[in-house]
Every structure is written in structure tokens, then in C-alpha cells.
Length: 138
Image (cartoon, rainbow, N blue to C red):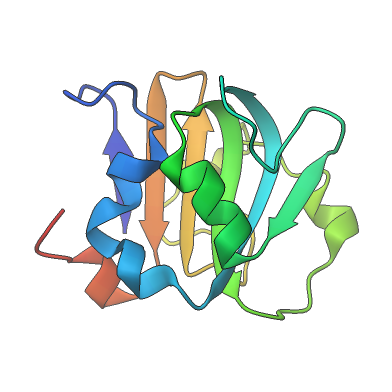
């Protein structure tokens, strides 16, 4: 199932703290993959423009989550800790892939949550876990 976030009352569609807030406590045991990024932040966070992708542990990703960072473009995925990943494929993924819009199609197959940001205009959130998808707090 996809959520498509476009017109909201939050500061911007890709404010991760607001998107993930209802399920944040359920995501403590995951690593985070971030790729194809364009972002703006006034804070020091563990992502930059010098790399094609990032694999962050929960503590590192929490710095991004807690910051006032706007993800303009990008793919953000929660994967089980220590998951074997093909980083060569991940480094070439694009938020513009047509599968991003397809329900139940994950760009990173191991993802349990995948957030795809398009030019600050739309954000797609996908969930493999029904509990996360149907969280009463969202």
C-alpha cells in the first residue's frame, strides 16, 4: 500500500520527523538506506553530497529524523539490521523510477518502509508491515 503525501499542513512534505512520528518507536531495529538524495539542512547530519548513497544505523538516522532537513529528492528505506545489500544497484537507484508509484513495488526489495521524495512536491510512503501501514496514529 502507498501513501501519497502532497498537500499537508506540515512544514514540508518530506519532514521525516512528521512522516515517521507515529511509527518511529517501531523502527528502532532497522538500518536505513538513503540514495539519490538532494536535500537542504542547516544542521550537521550524517549525509552529504559527496556520496551516492548512505547506510545508516538507527542512531545515525535519528540525527536526520530529528533535524529540520528537507529531502527534495531521494529514496529512504528501513531494512532489517545487517541485511546483505547490493550497494552497486542501490547507488544507481532513482526516485524517478516508474515502479516508485506502483503499490507494493519496492525499489529496495529488503525494505519494510520506503519513502520516496519527488522534487518536494510529492512524497510516497510504502509499508510491507500491515501494522505500520495501518497505524492508528497516522
